[in-house]
Amino acid sequence: MNNFKNIHVLGLGLIGGSLSRDLKRILPEAVIYGVDNNEDHLDEAVGLGVVDHSSRFEAINQADLVILAIPVDQANLFLPPILDALKEDALVIDVGSTKGSVCDAVKEHPRREQFLAAHPIAGTEFSGPSAAIENLFKNKTMILCEVEKTRQDLLEQAMQIFEALEMNIRYMNPHSHDKHIAYVSHLSHISSFMLGKTVIEKEKNEKDIFDMAGSGFASTVRLAKSNPATWTPIFKENKANVLESLTEYITNLTHFKNVLEADDYEEVFNEMHNTNHIKSILKGLS
Image (cartoon, rainbow, N blue to C red; front, side):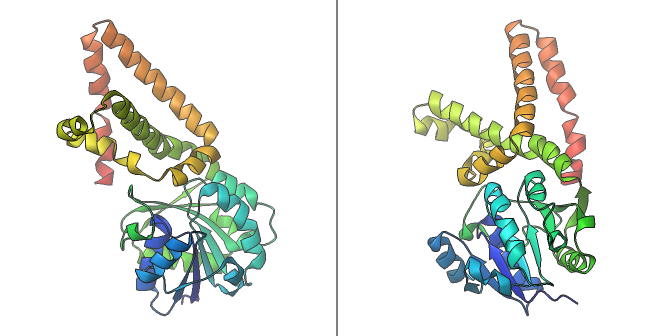
C-alpha cells in the first residue's frame, strides 16, 4: 500500500514535470502540488495539467512525499529545511544529477532517514513544464545512493513508485556516482556546448551551418540546446570530477591533433578503430 497522497514537486522543469505526469498516472488517488520560484512555470504547469494545483514552500509540512527537482546547488540549501518541516511519515526524494554534496548536506540531520538520494538517468535537451512527457523514465536506470540510511517503510513505498515507472535500479556510493557521471554525462554536455561554440564562432553565416550540417553534427550538438541554468550548477557541484574528466579528454584531443599533424594516419586509424569498442558497450542501452 502506498501512503503518498499529498505530493509536492519542487521544480517543474523536464524531470520534475515528467515525474509529476507519471505520478498522476500511477497514483490516481494522489494530489500533485507544484512549487516553483518561476511564477510563469507554475501557471504553465497547472494549465498543462502537469500538476493539479500550485503551492508554496511553506505548505511542505502537509506533504506525504516531496520530489526535489531544483538546481543541484539549491538542493543542498533547501533539503535541510524541508526535512525540518516534514511530517513524521513523509519522504523527500532528491532527483538531481549530483549526489555527493546533497548527501553530505544532511548526513548529520536528525531526520536523515526521511531522505532518499536518487538520480534518474533520463532526459532530453528541452526544459520547462512544456518539456514534461509521460513515460520518460520507462526502462531507464534509477541510481539510488545510501539506501541503508533511508527508513525501510519509506524506501519500500519509493521502490513501489520506481517499479510502477518500470525503471531499472542501480545502487551506488554518492561520491562514486559523481565521479562516473562526470565522464558519461557531464563531459558529454561540455563537449557538445564547446563544439557548438566552435562552429558558431567559425561559421559566421548561420545559413551555411543549416545547409551543411548533417545528422552527425545535429546529434553531436543536441545537448548544447540544454538549459545553462540547469547545467552551470551541476558543473559547480561536481567541479573536481568534471575537471578530471576534462583533463583526460583534452589529453586525447591533443594526441589526436599531434598524430594528424605528423601525418601518422596509421595511428589516426588505430585511435578510431580502438574506440569502436564503444559500440559493444552501448548495445546494452539500445
